[in-house]
Length: 378
Image (cartoon, rainbow, N blue to C red; front, side, top):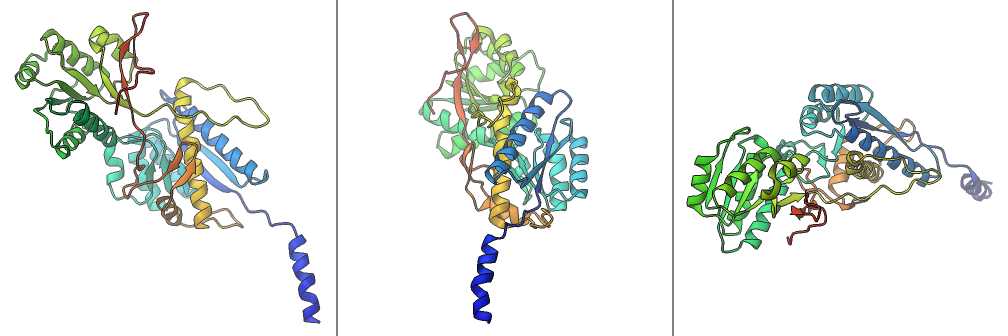
């Protein structure tokens, strides 16, 4: 009798519909209001579409659910969002956007056992604090600095390179990364100097630059000080090429630098891919700010979903993840296939081989200063 029942039960289990799994929640911490709201909306659009596409691929069942929260781009509010997510057992989080917000929220998420994928935060030390739960998709400032140092070591091989910063944490971090890369290449800088933000008189610094006779100067800092340095160098007859990070990626640089900005080389994150066309509806219009971060949010959702599936971390009955460490381990053992391409991370949580582009600011036919399409040889 038992032998006769076995084929029947096997047929019954095969014909029975699969038990629907409870949806897994993915939190989004983003500046949905405030000065960076345009970027926040881009993060939300990218994450929402990724969730919709994942659910469509699962047969239309709500396998994943996005839980958006407004952190206003502020550290204190981002920490409050993290505490709310922790209380609600949200263990997968995309965001925040700003480095300061990530720094404030990441320890809260770590204590709660939540995994965080930051699409754009660039401050180098974020991933140097031994946090097991934090990953970032974009290159860090240190990675940009090393890329600039590699460019200088190659493009100015056998020539003299000076390094100047605005002495801020951001600028000094970039300068230190460039110096370390030049030292590795066997061509250390001939001058390492700096000046505080807002300084207008650079006569003493320029005198030291003239004495050092650099063929190129790396500047770690932001657009206003970069323009001030350029004007001072050109007025003193110094024609050294200026190299900087995307800290100068600001309309104010073109306006303030004017003709002196011609030939300036800049490292920056390459233009992101566009989101896939949504099925059954027209794509939502996105501002340039939103477009710049939407793909990162989409890829962050993909990463978390793939890692959760690989680790079998979610309870199929409740959709809850008891501890994000399994997910974090799965992220680290990648790579994962995402909209941004194949993504893997190093032991710190930085993206391995994060793409960095080199652009040159040049005059356009109508007299503007622009970098679009002006690639520099790496």
